[in-house]
Length: 137
Image 1: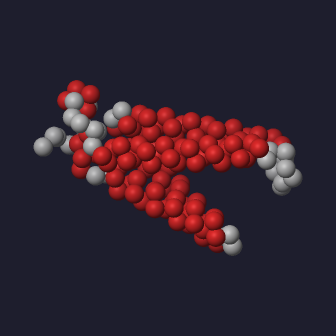
Image 2: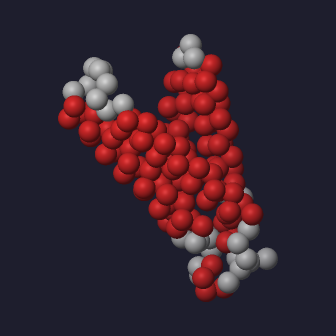
């Protein structure tokens, strides 16, 4: 039975997960915009590869925004893409600890904290109850 049928109130953990995933989507969008601004700069990737990377980033930002909205609405199927994204984020963030730039290391730490908080809140009892995975108490 979905939350739409039983009309339970939306818990804070659901709002927090949706907000964190939307924050990640906006961060990817900001990166895509920055990448698009510097698209003509010199680099090791040819123009076709740069355009592909820009399109991929824009797609991922819109996909992640859609996942956040649908999670907020209580769609349980959004949990799998959220978990996959958090795992990606953790793996990529760890690799950024090798950077000499403090802002990159700081962004990696923030990214790991956001991913960890998202996963913990995603499986909180109130969240799973809202998604219809466990009976209402």
